[in-house]
Image 1 (cartoon, rainbow, N blue to C red):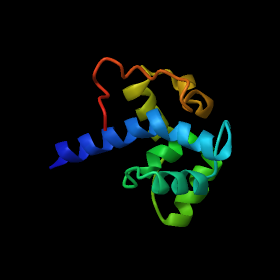
Image 2: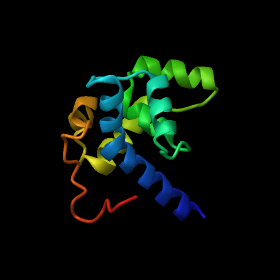
Image 3: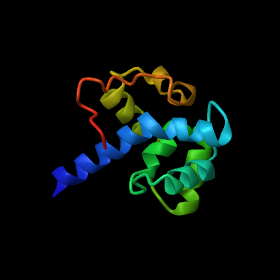
Image 4: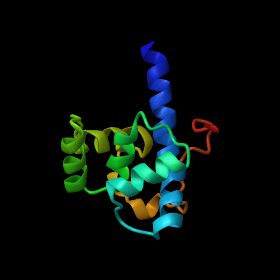
Amino acid sequence: MYLFSSIRKNRAVKSYIRRLGKDLAQRYGRADKYTPGQVVKTAHDCGYNMRHICYAHALYISNKHFDEWHLEQGENCDYDIMREEISTSYFSGNSDAMSSSNLDGGFDSGFGDGAGSSD
């Protein structure tokens, strides 16, 4: 059961990396960070997996807004730990590559080897 959950989470995170930044930039213009509401609305409207939206927040909103949003939602998510997990798993530990401006369609996240086949 955990294996399938992990696979679904990985697919969701890959879609946030590959496409969500582009969708956010198309809707709101290219930005270093977006608001939690912009991320949630775009993800929902575009049909992204909402179960792992915390990872999209870790990619596209500021630490301050991340903490405020998750406190309001009653969720216990850690911005730094999630960004470290994303950086290690998808960017060879290069956290600088996780800038929103790099994830709006102009950044090659290294999924061309088949590891990130179509979701």
